[in-house]
View 1: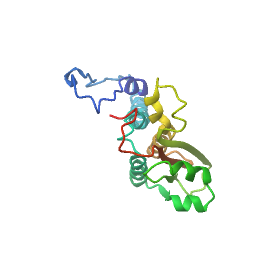
View 2: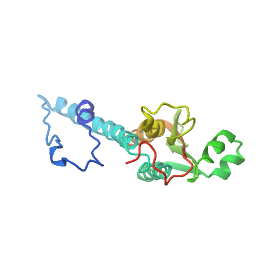
View 3: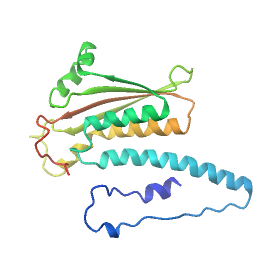
View 4: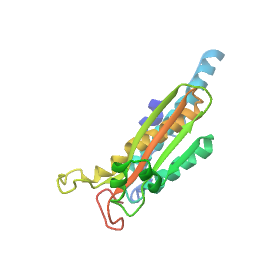
Length: 204
């Protein structure tokens, strides 16, 4: 199921020309000989669909242009996931982060007009499960050292938030699969571009 759903993934949100040529699979049929096989197939479809949708969430965030997938959008996605699945959510403001002595985070955050935030998502908090922590980088456009970087591939600097996207997708999948884990997702969301109104590589 995951092979099918991920194999046909497309990012067409911004496609304006030849939309009539976009092809999608309308129906798939899986067969089982016994009721036991049919049940296993049904369970597999459910699990595969959850995993695929969570991977596609991460893919959509990474594929989106940097002027649309902003630090604010990452925070809103985290809030949406926390509300849908009853997770604990903490969003630390820059002043709180600075008071904790996180100087490097503060220094990077000051490179943008949009204030940086530190996001902590917790699934199954306080239920006695083993703890697993996931940390994802959430810089939605990395202009650091831009004078030293080659022009080729510069638009991919928007991908510096891929770690954050992976954490968000994993948190969603874990909750939907009801995994017996205390899962902690930690995301720093920032943008190192001083004037957001300026056009930069990776914009739509």
